[in-house]
Image 1: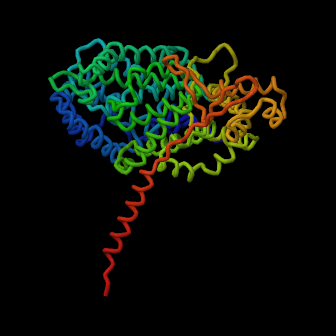
Image 2: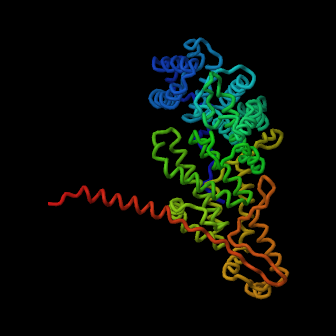
Image 3: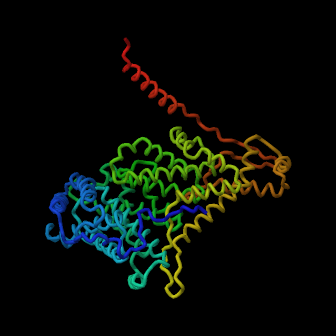
Length: 522
């Protein structure tokens, strides 16, 4: 197995009790003037539903202040800023949500802080679900709420699974707060947001031309609130991600069914949401052997990132964008090695892929020990950080089980790869012939005819999958059928695309012309 596999996306510190309060200079009750100004203006803009200003303060001012004043310490406590915002309950919940997000990003939260963050999310979602929320918030913030909620759940599961390094106080807290970040609680809140928002019905009505949800990016221009609707929408992506972390790929894809990812949607309005949606959607399809669907979606998102990543260089999410970009190239390399449908990939993406993994993809076709080691390496690098959601058994000796789920998914994946080993020989012979007798093919493969029939049936099974609508779809680049004792082959013809080639060379030609124009001839 790959030795460099790590679970935690954020830097972690084993000494969690002291990590967040490491700086003796930190005073949770001290509020700098710039922070007072920030919370007062943010509170006012939220009350006025000024989405543009909220977005600017959330995306720019909060990050700037964090970098300048709170690089190694938490923000001031909510009690210290509450009187500056009229002790507004909802604003204080929003502030604490940002407070904990900053803590997770910059420091290592203690177990008690993890539990407090769970309580804050419960209170915030309860207000959204059962209160009367009239505010409008930027889609970026609403996506970050769902994204961080799932991330903190994943982080808590990994924290709890490392039982050997937990001290007595932490074990006591885990026993007492056994419902904190429970998988049922996380799934129930995400599903409740989907149900209460009526987002599935809204998207259905939109298909009939009766709603304008996507056209307005989920915002309400009639004085209402976008919070519940957009949280419900992003919660479907959250459910997709949670079920992928649990290894339940069929349910993961079902959760995303109301969103037609072949069409523009609100999930594309936030780059993080766009990438997370396609990454998990593609990975789930890969694990369900729907390779062509995974290849199509990875190709589209990688092409999109290639064209737009320069516009996100100043974004706080830029490093995460680049990381997911590299992971999806690794997953695309796996898909194309198991299902060589290169014609589905744009030339720009294919060029990048060959530069990154061209040599490894050639070795992956051999299906020897070296090839399996590469599959192991790429899968371990690119897969989600799987979790075991069940709490530990405190009655038994404490053990670390944080990698159990990953090892199980890797084992299942490599088992599928090994099953493809025999099929690679069949594909090679079928590509050479348009028709061949079973006896001749059996002699080439050095097996008897009954074994060959079994291999051909296995090939059919492994190159076909059932989609969510129950239809059988083909991943094969070579189709065949057996008539009596003859195997008849129909190879799919790839459509050659010349557009990208000419466009690239036109751009190069224009660059040369511009360079020549700059040259001054004497």
